[in-house]
Length: 511
Image (cartoon, rainbow, N blue to C red; front, side):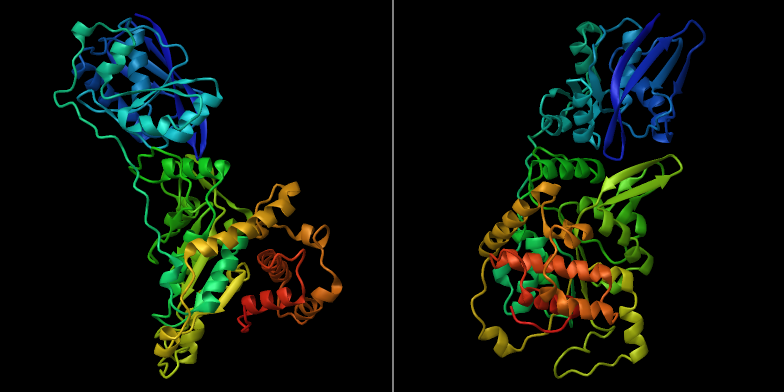
């Protein structure tokens, strides 16, 4: 009886930490001791491992088995440790050859089958970065693991396959009675709605283009049926594709935070999240029991978070968005550990003007009392709305306005202008490591990107009268820079500042 070790990976947020799994077999009565801060799901692995080893033809030896997960002070959760533990136990008994620096990531079934786990992409990335290039996973996770450059991936259906790969004797091995026949995983491209479906609403289409070109947050207020949701759903169709760094971040988040996802390629399209208004704070910002998991704001990283019927969300949920909107990160602290997730998303809000929705409709009578109106929109707090760059009304169009309007532009045409504006901004902001105008800091607007006093005169007067906060002034300047990029101007002019003020305060202005 002896000692063996294997390796696996523990995830804290998106950060992977290589864990050394040590197995020692003693001479005392049978027992299975698991050390190293395991959570309840990991403690249950002892019985899964016993059954998996027995049903694979290599039962654990009837002696005391001590398994230590090192570093012992690192919290560990989930079922991805199963395979590393059972292989270490069988190697310690001398029933399989040692595996040098190989990382094992899979859950075991009672029949000895291997089952996929979440978070394979960031886990394999961490393993390769730490010098562990050889990775063993369940076959369903193989395509996802192979997305990591430099990884040598082996995908197996059953523990018996892994043991044979480790040099165990074939005559003793047993495979599950019902071996799965897997079809190759194929990710179907999601058909995205096109902007040409939106008739009329020129102001809304213009605001959507500005939001896409500068990465700005957007709020739309209008009666039911005016097209707010249609506009919001078409924002991803005009956003540029993710670059390599953003693609890797988004893929890691969805590998960890989306249950049963099986990735076979890096995600290159901006993600879209539209949670229901009954969602809890944990569902939106992340959390849960045990180690915290990413919420909708992290799954929308480098994409769009759309809150339809925004005033119907609980106010505490909406106000929880304020800090991530500024920092682009969310740190979740729980009793078993903390995790930090990226959350740099574009927020799009849609709201009716009142509970009945008719206060802005021409020819319709609103039945809401003034107090009801104030209470309804009052759920969107001032500090939250102060962080929204573009705030506009979306009116309900008449039959004549819809039927006599021009043929709308397609998303591809608008996306071309957006890409050109983004390229101009990226070239200007490259020295600070920024990619769009929404990321520009106030210190840069006051120094290197400072505009002439003659251009900022009207904005200064609004701020002095207390109509706009200093944060609001900075956001108006950022929108003005985006308007200048769309117009191929070297820097914002007076008309760009005026248009940005109108788009923020709701005062009408023409495109």
